Amino acid sequence: MQAEKAQRSALLIIDMQVGLFHGPEKPWEGQRVLENINHLIGAARQAEAPIFAVRHTGPDGSPIAAGSGLWQLVPELQVDPAVDRLVDKTRPSCFFNTGLAEQLDDAGIGRLVIVGMKTQYCVDSTCRLARDLGFEAVLVGDAHTCMDTPGLSARAIVEHHNATLNGAFVQVLSTADVRF
Image 1 (tube, rainbow, N blue to C red):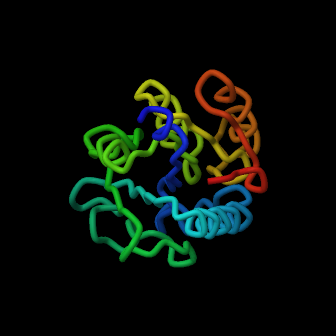
Image 2 (cartoon, rainbow, N blue to C red):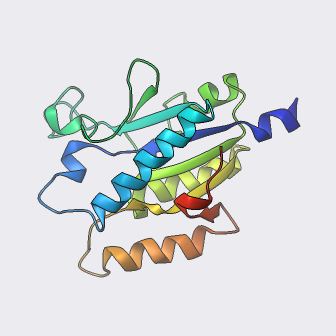
């Protein structure tokens, strides 16, 4: 059973939300990242791999409180709430108090293909924990992004995380090389 589980993949889309993607600070190469994620959604659907879309939820009254306009997934994202699974989180890790690991286990998922925002927070936290929880993790190196910071450009953050996470925590692949 364990070998069978390891072969079943799911796409995990992190925080592709209106308030982050279309906010005052634009994500680095956002349009390319969005196109790559949509390509992966299509590939996952073709392979009948489940898709999990995670939304970061702020406290009541915050701009990204549950149900607010900025909390919604970006409309350009080809996620279908009727068939895809939506998961809400309040911390950087997609696994903390969300039930995600249990949902993945119940679906027989052993491999996660990880994409989304923001590289240095939620993408990083999720990648690091996935392997500890027993999942094979793939970070799609050209399908995650963030914004510039005072200390580093977004490009440098993405490149750094692709290099740092590769091997110890994830396998980094390009969109073109991902198979479900």
